[in-house]
Length: 178
Image (cartoon, rainbow, N blue to C red; front, side, top):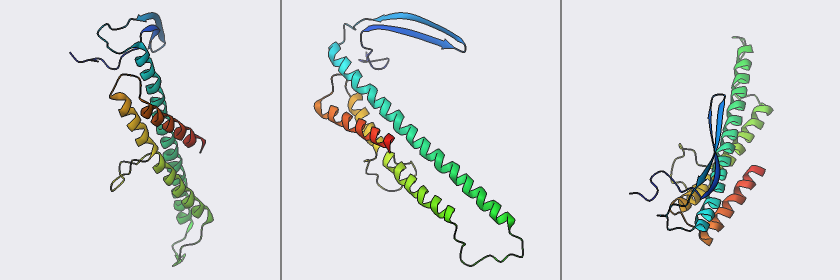
């Protein structure tokens, strides 16, 4: 019999279980009792739970930031592409196409901003199409390593893991502030 056949343990205590379906909602109080087969103390399980929840929050935050950056880049890319199509549509067949591109301050600004957004995104995660060996120093990898560290055990985290979790928490807060 697997130690945790249905997922991670639930901390013993009083809970409210709520089920929602469309407009209907039903809540019922639930008391979770300690599993007598469980060798870990309630304190270890609580410490583990208190460490795991912030990891999930950090992961969600990093993913949200990546999605926001990608959405911003895609939206502005679409605007710039439309702007270029409109510019070309205004040219008559008799207009000469200059050998050198016309300087466009807005396009230059967008190109510089797009580069900065790409750099920021790569500090958060390595996109799947990244070539070569990844250094895994971006924030999402650090969150994942913390998650793996906690997922491999169901006891109180070690001081090393707690230090890693604190580092991830601070880096996530800094990424949000940026």
